[in-house]
Length: 363
Image 1 (cartoon, rainbow, N blue to C red):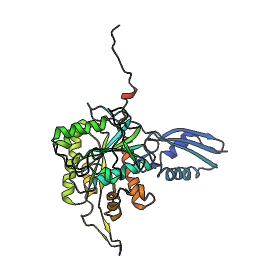
Image 2 (image 1 turned 90 degrees about the horizontal axis):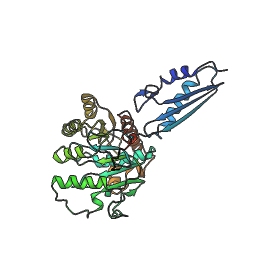
Image 3 (image 1 turned 60 degrees about the vertical axis):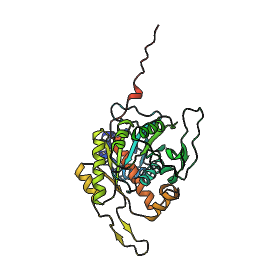
């Protein structure tokens, strides 16, 4: 007969850390129920972020610890996921049918932001979330090419538009509406208006996450977009190069000004490994992302190598996570997506949908 109690089991779970949240299961409020029956322990956990690639590891860790308790013969673990909506900036209305929006930004161009954004969106889908991507770069839209999708979106009512779907990913881009070679010679207010229309007039279908691929830079257009687009959290993409880190810091400060939490930093092109000899070289320097993360007290979500297959996949509409799902590169993208979503799950929830709607009518 098992001589233990739910309280004793909870104490053991308090020693198990979720590596993505960097908190133990109890303080993270993941433990929903504990039952001890004879020599059997049954536990119900609830995760606030998608983590299909991590659940088995967590399950094995818990089971291993509990089986060390004398008398335990069987451990049953019920782990489910409940992705909640999180708050956006004050004064900005969330998007209908979209629980969370994550902006992917960079202080400058050429750091692989759009490639990272599409693979991050695909990684969240692979982890079990319903995901979409909005190409917010009006002047240089790249998501149609990266997703291998050039079709003009449908409109069933002449007022709203349906997102294109590629690799199970809902997407919208100005690139779907104009020719690829047509330059967008628009001033700032026109860009902002066009983006607000694409965001609000697209029939997003019950998304857990909408990744917003922001244009590079920290100028007036970027600041205006961040003030008007609802954003639950932001991710900064940089390379280890000093000049890229300098601009990435400006991007981080921009989000602070508009009260958008920065979920973390992704260091892209961190290292290059020769495909012939295996020699590893830090072409753009090393340790810059980690130093920036420590300086501004944000998380380094992960580092990605300078790899030919990532570039070729993006150029040919065959992104890495979709076309090589079992590769080490895809595993890295998925690990980064789990960490970003986990950090967002710790942020303030959005309870606006729970409030009653008050309507004043004349009797």
